[in-house]
Image (cartoon, rainbow, N blue to C red):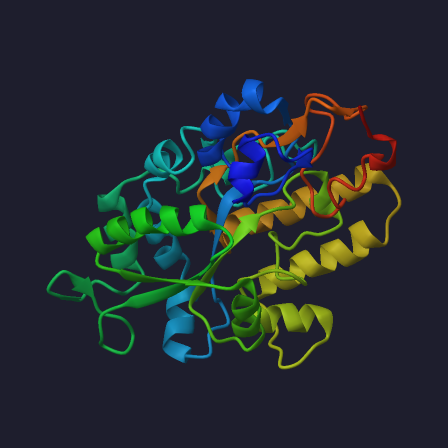
Amino acid sequence: PLLLRAANGDVDFYQRSEITVPKNQPVLSEGQEAGKYKLVSIKDPNHNTIGICFNLTHANAGKRRMLQNKDFRIGLSHAINRQQIIDIVYLRQGEVWQTAPRPEVPFYTSDDFGKQYTEFNLDLAREHLDKAGYAEMQGDKRLGPDGKPIVITVLAQSRYPDTVDAMEFVKRTWADVGVELRIDSVSPELVSTRLEANQFDCTLDKGELGYLDLVADPRWLFATGGSSYAPLWQNWYEGGTPSEAPPEAMQRQVAIYRERVVASSNRDEQYAAIKEIIEIARDEFWTMGVSLPGKPYAVVSDRMHNVPGEDQMWLSFKAPYPAVVPMTQFYIQ
């Protein structure tokens, strides 16, 4: 109903990921003249359409070892046809990318993190999965640490239907390398409950905080509040319970962040420290992504005035959008 209202010109201002998404852009673009509105492009600090987050502190010891195995994660990353997802789910908008900072961040100019392990290559995927220790097969399925076929259940938030559509493609290509993926489309509330209880294999999240905002909230670089891939390590960082000390590499990230980012007021020093943290995240490959988001946009009716123009608003929940724009100075005429 909201999409129809927007396309009919019944909405004065709207920007939310539930409606203003790539798949709806053709409908909204076509209705601009009749509906007397325009689509205004917005700057995007987000680094990914989908962050794929394995539970690296899984309650099951066997699954934990499997998911913590970097070769296992690399293998599954090579078994994702990201370009196909971009072409079909995101209407050819975006670029193949891992859960790395955006290309334009001033403190990390290389694309080595964003592009690593993104080649769609099933033979290479099988090679890494074999190297991880899961070469034994039962028919066309790999056997896990318990001697049973590997099954990974992913929690997808129902409010983001694009992630469910994308994971259907991932499901097919992971099956080609012997790993079964089950997709549970559930409410955000249930995802939060399962995360807090450490009761999940894998979850999906929008890759927010990929530009300057990651300096204040580096959750995609190591497990902090709001991260979705290691609840017990997150609790350790925050002083919560139950908790578990993360690997030495992540402890180094935390120390660098606290001693040289939080404790410093010098931007250059902060950026140098963040670069080191990014390099560790690159080497450890905690999470994986699909693609850089396409250009976001807002619906603005023709009777709305004094609204910022092209690329003058930010799509950032940390701001939070659109509150940082002086909306009290918009007017209707």
